[in-house]
Amino acid sequence: MMEPSTKPTHPPKDDPISVEDLKQYDGTDESKPVYVAVKGTVFDVSPKREMYAPGKGYNVFAGKDGSRGLGMSSLKPEDAVPDYSTLDDKQLKVLDDWHSYYTKRYNIVGKVAQ
Image (cartoon, rainbow, N blue to C red; front, side, top):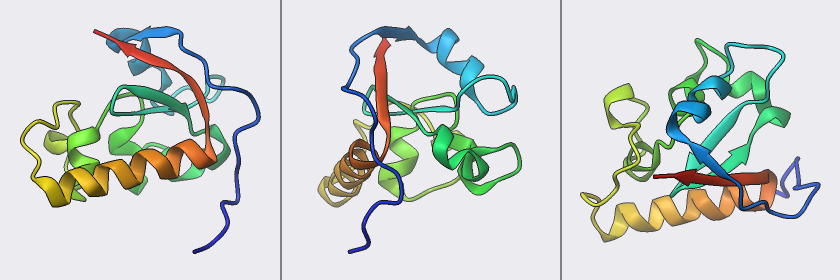
């Protein structure tokens, strides 16, 4: 397994971030960080901003919780939604793997507030 090229630089934060606020961090504004939420945990993925920029593969997850799409290994916008209750065990494992992948690489800036 490759060592992560990025690592968290500060302890996880627990700040509530509304779905509306999260949308502002979708990579379209160069002056703002890029956030991706996985299972309600909000990660600052700015160190890999180029992968989440508009028009890039992972942009579908920028500025939102796309847990269902991650679990399904889908890049379709309609799958990039927070509700992952429809995933089967195998897909839930994939989603959990993504969550730990992000946890090892990026700063946690908060939680999605419902």
